[in-house]
Structure formats: C-alpha cells, structure tokens
Image 1 (cartoon, rainbow, N blue to C red):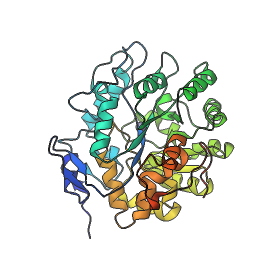
Image 2: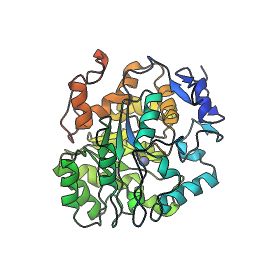
Image 3: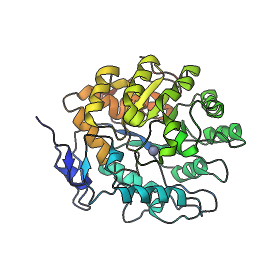
Length: 367
Ligand SMILES: [Zn+2]
C-alpha cells in the first residue's frame, strides 16, 4: 500500500487508521487497542529565565499553542518535522524562546502540566519524561519542573545543569533527592559543544548519580545556523566512549545526521536513539539496523502536537507489533528507573508481550 504522507494539517491525521476525531476538540484521538502502553521520552513544560516572572505551570488553559500549530499548517510525514515550519512560524518560535528571559507571557504560558496530561490522555500516552534545560545564570528550570510535577506521578523530570554554571554538583544532588531521574543537556541552546571539557564534566555528574543523559543531537532546520557545529554527531563520540556505564539518549536521533547517529549506536551499546521528528522510512531503517530495543518514541511537545510524531511511529511499525511495543514504551521503561519500577510493580496494565527486563537506572541496556 502506498502510504499517505501529506496532510493539510495535524487535525487531518484523524484520517489515519489509528485515530478518530475527538468530538470535543476536533483533534486526533488514539483509537482504543492500538497500543496498550505509550511513554513519551521527550517533552518540556513552559520555561522562564532571568527577569521573567515564573510561569503558572499547574493551570489549565483553553488550548495549547504548540510552536508547530495544530491547525492550518500542512504537514509532510516523509521528512524531519522541523522542515514543515513555515518561515514566519520558525521566526516566532525563535523569538518566543529568547523572550523567556524577560516575560512569562506568550505561548509558553500554555505549556502546563494539566495541558500536557490532557493531550497525553487523548493520545493514549501513559507517562512522559519532562526535560529541563538550564542557562548559566538566573536559571531555575529544573526546580520549576520538579515543583510543577509534584504529585503528577505520570511525569518524570530530567534535571539539567548549564556546563558553565557554578554549584552544579549541589544542584544535581538536590534534584535527584527531589526525584529527578535523568539529565538533559542541549549543546545548541546552552551553546557548549558535547566534546567540550565542561560538557563532559556535566555528563560525569549524571554518571555519578547513575542517571541516563538525554542530549539534543543534530542541527535543527529552525535553529540559528551558528549553532549547527555544536550539535554535529561526530562530536558526541567522546562522551559516550568515556562513560560506557551511562545510557545516552540521542534526542531526535541526530535529525538529518541520523546515519551518523546509527553508526554511533552500533559502535556504543550505551547509545539509544529517541525518534522525535524522524520520518517512517528512516525509523524503519533504524529498526532494521539497530533493532527496536535501541529506539524510543518522543514527541518534543510542545514544539509539536503529540499526534504528529506518534503518527510517524505508527506508520513505520504498521506490521511489526513487537517493534511498536518496544519503541512506544519498552526501551524507555528499561532505561529510566521510575518507569521500569512502575512496570515491574504492575502499576501499568499487565501485558505479556511488554514484559521487559528491568535494568538499573543509568546503566547500559543489556543488548
Ligand atoms: Zn526538545
């Protein structure tokens, strides 16, 4: 069957066989029985830094203003999703990211815990990893996310440190004590290359606490071109080689350098690829080359509505239920301690096919 890859916008994804149109919102809703367990390995909440007032992350707002709009912008599932941003929407997204320094207004005010949970419910996502990103000064993203998600046991926070900030050792210890279960590092946003000694030191802090590290990898088409050299895939080799006991999750699977990401994953068993944005053909290639237990579903919400990356994974795994189960939940449950624990405790619906070996946090997956 020739698969359809172009849609007039994200609401039109309802036409795919795994979705229906939600009556209340008109947005895609996952049909029952498509997947018994989904974990989103890559989400964020609203961020504010510097002089900006703190965002109210526990309020529900009438809608989520995803950076990539749900309505009115065509999507092409055949390439990396950021290529679908019209230029003015990409400009607005960059502006919004910078204005987080002085204002708490704008789309970011809609990136809240209740809004994320509501979208997860509509799309059958049980749990999600929430990623903080810290700046060098006046930065409190980790604390804000831990506070906002306190009591929301479906959300699991990865802390962050800026490699040039002071007091990182103390910050990580405090975050872990409050429940952080991984670390997020972002070479492009933090403006520090992955092979810089300071970035290595940050990753070693994660390793000391047996935390997995999710790195942003690859040059995004909507990022300033100046930052491209900071996320080139070859520059991640040093850190994954130096810390073989630490699991490194490559966010976006290297974007358009996905083949280099695959080569690194082949060489280093402590590397796992998170698929947000990647098209079905590449996901199939990765399943063939690496196996689904090295791949994890992620959405990069609120940059994209969850339905968009989910549709790509469902297309890629159409005839492969075991691969689908591993990508949608199995891989990340094996890597992130609280996710694995809850599976082992039977907190989630039991399913024989998804009984995966529980591994210690931060250790390389047994492959
Ligand atoms: Zn992200």
